[in-house]
Length: 162
Ligand SMILES: Nc1ncnc2c1ncn2[C@@H]1O[C@H](COP(=O)(O)OP(=O)(O)OP(=O)(O)O)[C@@H](O)[C@H]1O
Ligand SMILES: [Mg+2]
Image (tube, protein in one colour):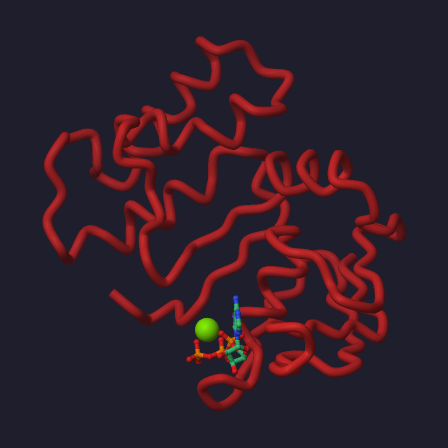
């Protein structure tokens, strides 16, 4: 269960008010789409409930617990969140498998060897065990990179985007 309680997010010292008092609840297992015109704050909201950023005001609760400390945020983000970005945001100095394994390597209780095997299996399942990846395969690559934690919550910006 995700609960967003009166969340505000401001940028540029309050000049840009991207979110103003958002409240919502997403029960476990529910598929939820955030829809609205460009610039209305969809990505900002996903960044907050995926713990990639912090609200200016208000709280986010995951299964009843507030995402307060940076430690709690990073454990939640690395173990429970799968994020599929509009742009790939992969680290160029790591291999594709290392990018996929990264969240689990940060906090998972699995061994390095188990994580490596899981990353390779996920890549193989989507047909990406190859080193070179063409444009149409980029969405699958981004999607795979969001799956190696425990995958409890998956967030995607503009899911139909290639
Ligand atoms: N890091 C930032 N610094 C300053 N302003 C920002 C930042 N991120 C977002 N904004 C502003 O906050 C508002 C909401 O942006 P956001 O990216 O959340 O919109 P969106 O609904 O996801 O748009 P789109 O449909 O184009 O992806 C916009 O006015 C945007 O310019
Ligand atoms: Mg967006």
